[in-house]
Image 1: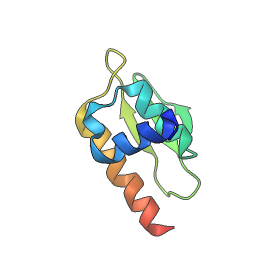
Image 2: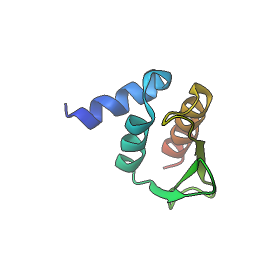
Image 3: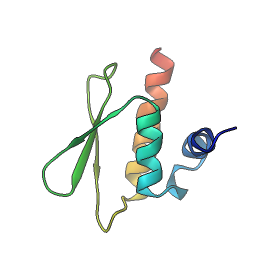
Image 4: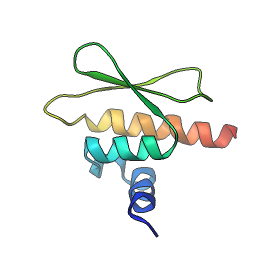
Length: 81
């Protein structure tokens, strides 16, 4: 199992334990495109989603709520495929 696959598994089971840079790696692995937004926010866009995942960054990390929200949105994407 590669490192990114381990991060992905950790993301699905315990997203609050990931740091932002690890979360970003997982999203890029899942074919999300990183888009700069205003201020301290970062957007991730996927061609199969009608909405963007927006993550506010503060001190190079994000709150656990946003990590869990990203996981929920991605699992809903996987069930649609």
